[in-house]
Length: 624
Image (cartoon, rainbow, N blue to C red):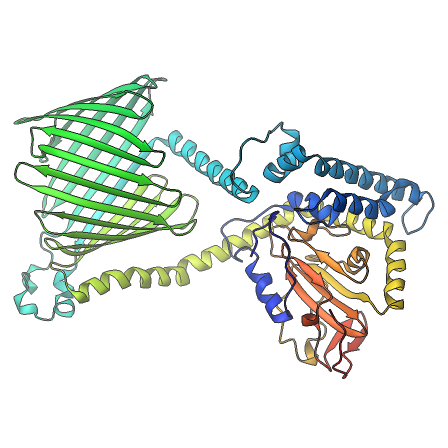
């Protein structure tokens, strides 16, 4: 289904009522999303909806829509009291509508201004935005802008805090699961007496970063490690100096108790060209010294490579690394060969949706193969949950669960088995799915629903005056077009054309079983969340045909947004060639009528006001 306010997809004919109900629900945002859309202004100001034309319409169609609407909204046509409004009020409302109509036609008639509006909306017209070489659709530009804005806001918030950390508490579940996961437990390395052994460990890391000046940055990091009744700690201090946009230097030192470290490290980086850079690092420890020299090269806009020589220390050797980053996926490969060991590996990650990403990591070396399968899910704007299943020939099967929020991570590695087996692998892959489903049903789902209801209640209170004003303007539109509506209705009756009997727009209650007579009254008009729009739709008819395009219907003449932030649908009951038809579509879904698929079955009953209408028993139809 097209996204909200999509301006690039041509309208398609609507389907039958059951298909319309499904498509209307599918085209709307999730019912219990974490945020509420407050797009009342954007919907009411959609230029294409205001004219009821397609987003890719021609200049002739724009001028035709202007002439059609000018017949109703020209101020000179309301010099007399033709409705319940006073003459001055009617003329003032018509003057404002006609000025709005002229402005919209001027914008859409100018190719440059129309392109700016398609890309940035009405705000782009008043902010001086220009159009350059764009290769994305307007929807993609708006979506990218929203993502970048949210990302920048998050970075600004994290930079103000300057604190990040990680708490990792591992647990050894192998003694408890041994008899279930291993077909021959007598050959296992552990015995029942090993419960509570040395497999448990706790790692606490806290990092504090602060800018001392425009060029200097201080990074303070502390680590606390306990395992098997023993522990140690490390405190590291790093000072970075940015000499220019092409070079920087970093001095790091650390001291620890019970944990071996490198007391001093000096690193310098320099950009050699727009595509190449080099880095050199010297690390000094108590018993060894190490020199690292690295060269980086940007091979293409999405591919980079790095070659590093390591002299001295336990990692002495040559290391090569290549990485390719796309819009939704990344692929990394590396190879390291040392004096007595080697290691080769590859990693792949893919963003399967806006909130979910998966990763695969395979390493081969002297310790045997290691396979890491991971999945990360963003559960809110600042929180994410991830799980990793690690299969290692040396360490067995480990399931790692982690929860991150605002730079703070909580990780829990669980050792399921000390060697790889089919049962342990299946448990490691199925357990996260079961836990996620349970958490969604028991905790996340109810919290989202409560949050959604609170946001909707708050939004209703904030938008109450705007909705009241919008309803009043919609009623004024209907009063101005009342004469034209009666004339069109009389013409349609003479030719047995389309007569709009009942039309409601807004939040509609779920539809009951539609084939029974007891459901004839559905839907019922609710003044708080829906709007009666039969007169407005009758006015939009042209030669017994009605075409609404894929933009928010709240911007149509005689329409408004009666329930901002909530899912809206349009219900239409109409008569064509003496037969009853009905259709339900979503807010941004297109609508074409009359269509034969909208025809009600013989004997179906529908309630219009106080009168109950019954579909004739004849099965003949002239619907197109």
